[in-house]
Length: 266
Image 1 (cartoon, rainbow, N blue to C red):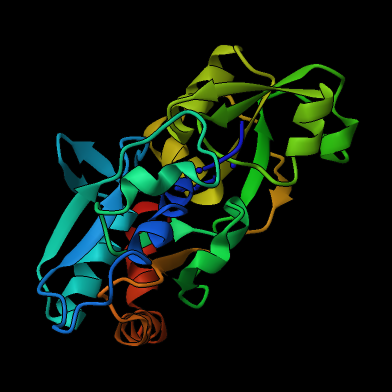
Image 2: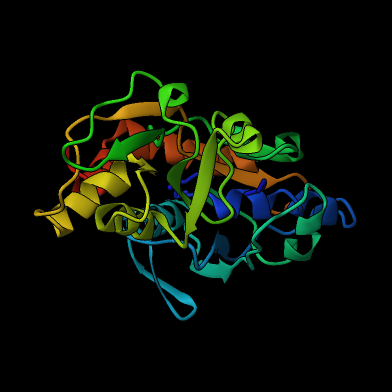
């Protein structure tokens, strides 16, 4: 996988980004620990779905986020600990304070998905997770999002913030139809509950792999650009530079590309 606070997606991925927005306020209350961290606490939410993450209980058992987290932990020489970040339907800029003790790192988000991005230290962009509009087979491709008929129901993910679409939602030109995750949004589209859906290319590729007979349109309309980032709240005992260096090495050496190819080739 973008009602405000959370995203997209993506997967964003997404909901987790909004949750992270409160970590910094908590981190400012305590000094950075003198000793280095003994584990990598990586946040996740129950809104994750494949190919991003298969969440079973308090574990992330598969998916792009899981594989990136495990590879990163190995490079840092730290055990990976999954830390569930509680989710809300709407998250105000200050309301993620209750998240602050849950995790030191979040991945799979973009700074535009929440307002106080400056409270976090951001990794370099790693790969594209931009949202695109998809419809059902037989639908004509819209020229732009604004050219969709007034009142069109758009499949979205609960808690995700979609900066480029929000003005159209606010005006009533388009209507949100929330699903728990991007896969569920695509299932609603296939069943005809929505006219179009907004998903990442990774989620769409995975869905089509699992459902090759799904009657989806061939056209894709880019909605908003976004890159996969990881973020550390300012004041965290986790120092950014070793993490960013490890992620950059994963990108440079092709490890990220290999992870993506397992789930969303092409």
